[in-house]
Amino acid sequence: MRSAKVIVGLVVAALVVVVGGTWLYINVVKDDAPERLALTESPADDESAVADDEEPEGLEGTWTVGEGSAAGYRVEEVLFGQATEGVGRTSDVTGTVTVEGTTVTTAELEVDMTTMASDEERRDGQFHGRLMDTAAFPTSRFVLTEPIELGPEAEAGELVTATATGELTMRGRTKTVSIELEARQTGDTFEVAGSLPIVFADWGIPNPSNVVASVGDQGELELLVVLTRS
Image 1 (cartoon, rainbow, N blue to C red):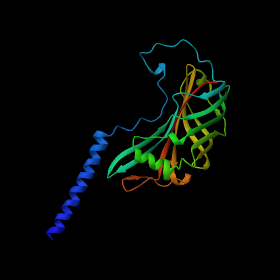
Image 2: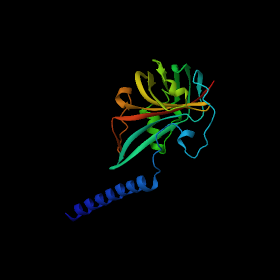
Image 3: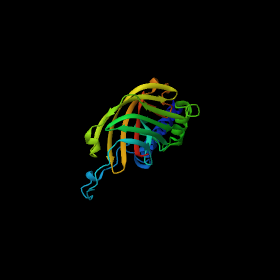
Image 4: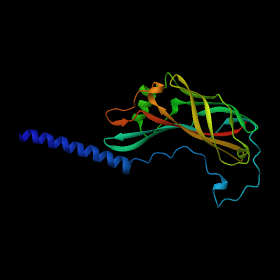
């Protein structure tokens, strides 16, 4: 009986150490998850900034994905009862967007999934291995299938919201999706940011849960595209 109590005591102590250590790691040691990908602050948002008298050149033309663009994922994780977020990012985003007047007529974006990285090597190993199998499916791709009317506000450099409907190819599967976006032209760049809920089973992605972390049945795809004139 005494031996049994000792064993139970050791197990309880071990659990306290594990849970307490996890809490300490998440709340003290671990850096906070990155903020969501979003448009950069425009001069008009900064009251201390000097107003720019130059009018935007207009949106019409061909735009190329440039520096500052990023794509990634965000998932809710529970580690031994402690809630946290897993976030992965890559800056390897390429593509082009064509605008006629104030209407986006074509858009093709590609993300290099092999360079996606988070703050945890074990999570990255799971991502590139059994979850996304980036050796077999190294890229994800979005192709716009319906035009997007941005309106005159976009040409004036104002923040606009829109829905991009197109075909998303990820992990070898292609589906029609609609992504809610925010967009704004600032100077000689045109930025677009958005996110899309991803149900793992819909894309053939195994549930990421394991003996250490518990994850729900979905995550979130995030995107920031910084476009420059071609």
